[in-house]
Image 1: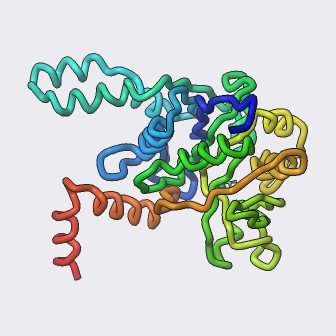
Image 2: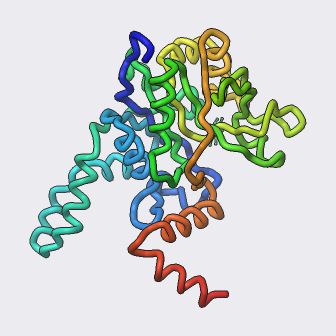
Length: 290
Ligand code: G1P
């Protein structure tokens, strides 16, 4: 174990994006609140963080995202109604959501990019290592994927990115790393945000899970705006990687994106097939369709 290692206690979930890829559904409802089976997408992220040992979560929201705050808040009126109707199981399920973690909300006043959203959490994170979980990326797995990143951080005292192999066609949609394998570990040697296929340094794309050292905040404050005229987290991590060790963890679970309609439908289907209470009915429904 490396000396002076700080325990990972905090996570940031950026949830300020406008969800334009999913209009008109996102006109009045934040995409993070779309249900995947019976839970809003963002609840899976909170549960993954909690299952990884994190108990302090900062959700960075923007305009028209009140529903997210309401979801993690107590609704005494509803509890009262459920109590009267003797809906104990549902009531307990709702109370579990309130007790999941200490959840704080910060408002990103302008949509200036993922790097900027993370920077908004600087004051709350202070000088501690922290996790970042992106709302478009759900990961279905036995061991929470974030826990792998925390384990690597604990072993190497390095920032860690979760990565997954993607096809040549897909690299231009993601941050892509350059890396070297050292005794089975993936050591990051550079990265680029959404490169054209012929300029991609590898086929390993960054999935929305990061374990970052707090030095990244100072870098985010200094670097210029990047791709799409936004403050890019990948650009800051590239600079961090020049002065400190950054490692990668190749995803073990199933990566499901929920930021657009087709992938959202696929994710909901896969989650429903992974659940004991829905698998059988969904399977027989599909069989009857084809
Ligand atoms: C963001 C990051 C990108 C990463 C991706 C993962 O992109 O900037 O590096 O690969 O999330 O989902 P976005 O999807 O917000 O454009």
